[in-house]
Image (cartoon, rainbow, N blue to C red; front, side, top):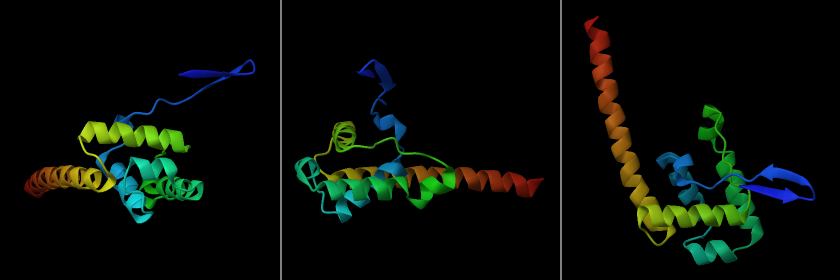
Length: 127
């Protein structure tokens, strides 16, 4: 989407759940939970300083620094949009349900990675 601003235009990034893996979503849900943002209503009505704090902590989380990744959510509206998309995608109604659902998926992903690495390691030992 491109928005015009007095003759200038700038690209407003589309909000997509596909831009965020399970680990990213878990980090976000943990931050929301820690700040007492348990559902959409609280996200829409909480103090701006809470939103700023969540976004700052999410963007500066060590896992993003290590991988040189970026979070492209900068405003409450964008965060609300993402939250709504995630609730719909995972068919849940609040932060805890979202966290629990994504946690199960993350565990499955990690288990799959472990099995893959085990096989890779066995092959390395054979050579």
